[in-house]
Image (cartoon, rainbow, N blue to C red; front, top):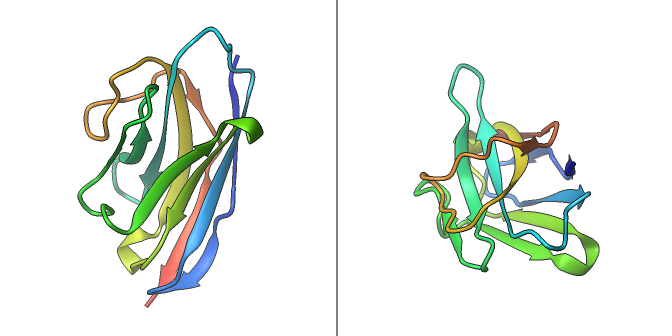
Length: 125
């Protein structure tokens, strides 16, 4: 059972930066995992923001490409989302997710197994 705990959310002005962290525990070293960040704004569907494929490639939603960077520190079992040049439309609850899988890309991968509880990001204009 994989347990995901997000942190790092908060309130920031437009143009600012935040770094989200997701501590993952319980991963089986014999499995390959895709991991990613998703977000959900009030009244909107949850959407993929950034995905880290099990083999290393990253992919991003068009709305964040060039501003957000997904990365992983395997030694710390932590997934990160560096968010730069934040916009008010980035305001949402951000969720970390994981699944035993491969060939995962933003827009085509939807994890069914493991989700964190979310961390709120609020960007003011």
